[in-house]
Image 1 (cartoon, chains in turn yellow, cyan):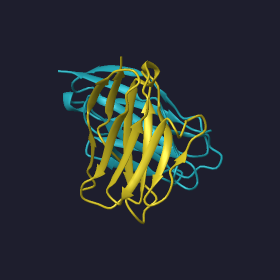
Image 2 (cartoon, helix red, strand yellow; image 1 turned 90 degrees about the horizontal axis):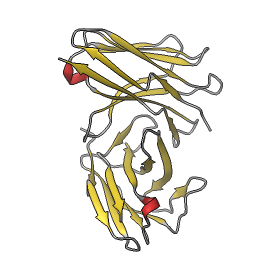
Image 3 (tube, helix red, strand yellow; image 1 turned 120 degrees about the vertical axis):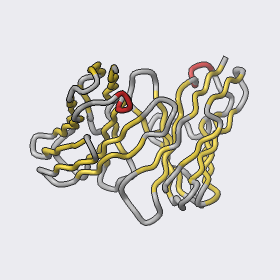
Length: 116
Length: 112
C-alpha cells in the first residue's frame, strides 16, 4: 500500500516552454503533498507544500509564479514549471502524506527535467 | 533551518560485511527522525520512524538507534548483500511535520 506515482519520469524541453509534472497517490487519499527539488550531490529541498483545495505554501526563495502547483483532488497534485530555463534543470520529486497522519511521507520516483 | 548531516557520503563494502553510517541533527526541539532507503530509479522507501531517545528499531538485517540528547542516529546493516546497495537518507521534521529536513544521504555499494 501507500504507492505514489509520478509522471513523466524524464523530460527534455526547450527553453521558454512549460512542463507539467503529475504526482498521484494510487491507493490512498492525500490531503497534503510535498514537492522537492534535488541538485546533484545535495539534499532534497522542500519547494512547496500542496494542500487539497487550497493554495500551496511555498518555501522561501521559491517563485510561486514560476512553479505553479495545483492540488485539485485528494489523489493528484501537479507542478508546472513555467517558461523553463536551463537553470531549472533538476530532479523533482513529490511525496504524499496519508490523510489524518503526521508521520511518514510516501515518495514518487521523481522526474528528471532537462531544459535545453 | 535544521542542519541534518550524514556521513560518510559513500561507502563501498564487500558482500557479507556489516556496516553502519550516521545521521546527525540538532538535539533541541527534536520531534522525529526518519530513515529512507532509495534505490536508483525507484521511490524512496520508508525504513524507520524514530521518536524516543534510546529507540532501537529493526527490520530484517537493518537496524537503527537514536540518541536525541546528543543528536545522532546510526543505521546498521548486518551481513550486507548486493540488494542493499542504495542511498540511505535520514530526515527530521519540524513540529508540524509539514517540513522535513533531509540529509544528503549515504550511498552504499555492496560488491558481490
